[in-house]
Length: 286
Image (cartoon, rainbow, N blue to C red):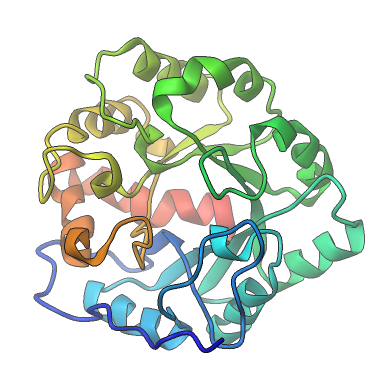
């Protein structure tokens, strides 16, 4: 079945925030022609190609990207590898979906292409959940990769003990993905700070529009959580566009420029550079 071409906006008014040299988008997806959705994943509404993303990069002033395996492709990383080849190693790294049964030879092949982590998705449509997270870490630990973990932050108490058992680096995704947002002084936000203080957890600023009830551009119900974590651990924060925003319908589609501009309010200039340049360089080896 042919997948329609992208109709999402790829340019527009320039962001107010001027991204520093080496700025990295640590969370974007691609959907390429010739690669169909896999069983268990959502259907693909439109393509989101490497060339499409390059236009977005130019619009936002970004230089590097971390491609995240989308739910649609489940455990089939073929499109991810194709995207890495098209972008090239100076521009892109990736987060793949790995199972406890992924052979070492495949891990080595993916590493050579630019994969540096494994996605754990504890939400509907996810291919590998927290029940297999520690087994996946056992598989990837010799590669020097990290885990990227997404879950509903309101359920953090269900996963806290497992997260504490992670030995390597891991990312708490999507601002903790509280569905719906909680106050910044909530016990579960305290728990996120404790996990970060242990020394191996990171926190991604990404997708505020997916959970916010107040909406953009300021996301006043999500921003207090983000600001508290950023202030607490500026050396452990990364940012992602979440392009092409497949989790919402077109009527809810956010402004990509505004997703970058939130950093003007949420972080000072020195921290902005850490979030966009220094921290991604450490995690992904740019």
